[in-house]
Picture 1 (cartoon, rainbow, N blue to C red):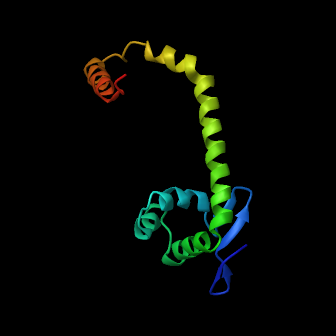
Picture 2 (cartoon, one colour; picture 1 turned 30 degrees about the vertical axis):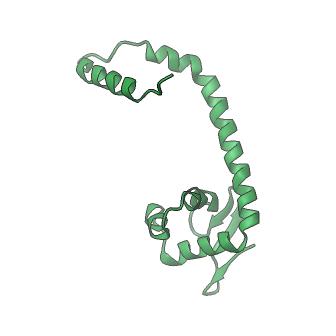
Picture 3 (tube, rainbow, N blue to C red; picture 1 turned 120 degrees about the vertical axis):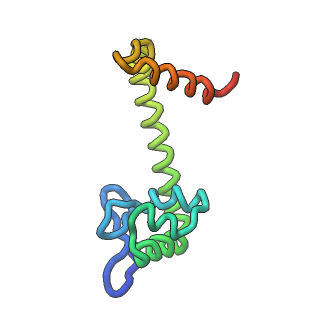
Length: 124
């Protein structure tokens, strides 16, 4: 389950799942960028990983593709369920906040924000 480089374990299983040793970064975090086809150098700099750490993560993902992909799908499904739950829990609160007047002194910025939001709303 672990990939070793220079005698040390590089990928470990924690309560969060498969994790890059010495970090809090899971392979599922890395998978978001791997599936979007970001280059390894970008992923490495994004997570502030060493060359060894990113290589170990990518090698592990490639070597255990089916296992990592299955767990990644579970993580994605759970994240979507949580998003939906909190969206439902906060729907009334978000609607109430949206009706509040702008903070004093920020009316011009508030108006600019509202115009920008309107331009980015999907057309029905």
